[in-house]
Image (cartoon, rainbow, N blue to C red; front, side, top):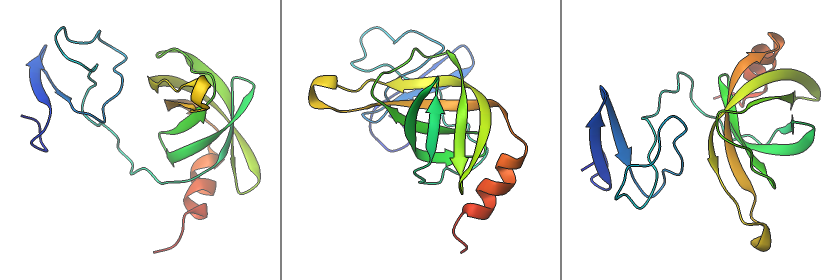
Amino acid sequence: MGPSGEGIAREGAGETFFASPDVTFRTDRAPVPGLSRPIMTPNTRKEPRHRRRLRVVFEGRPAFTTNVNLGGFCAELMRAVSPSTTVEGTITVEGRDFEYVGDVRWVKPGDLRLRLPSRVGVRFVRVAPEFATAFTQSLPKR
């Protein structure tokens, strides 16, 4: 059993994996035979995610984020891209555009017939240094 008591836990190659209904894609390994869903590595985020709807330009196409942190973002797109793709664009915070280069870490395909967008997780490889300050200052004060 996994940490929440649901799903499938598996160890291999020195790593622990967990498959549950909310896990959608894993970029560095093929799905495990016999599982109904692909699996992914455990959460390795160093920064908390913040639910923010920011405008991003993703490979020349406009999109919006669902959550963001200093390490990357999740965005909704009508056309999915392949995992492990390097992407370039801009992310807008408080009216200022910041250029980024990132790696697509995971993809959850949407359904064009139902007008459901795809979701992609992007890890920043390079982002303008001023982004961290602008993003942190834009967060609600607690």
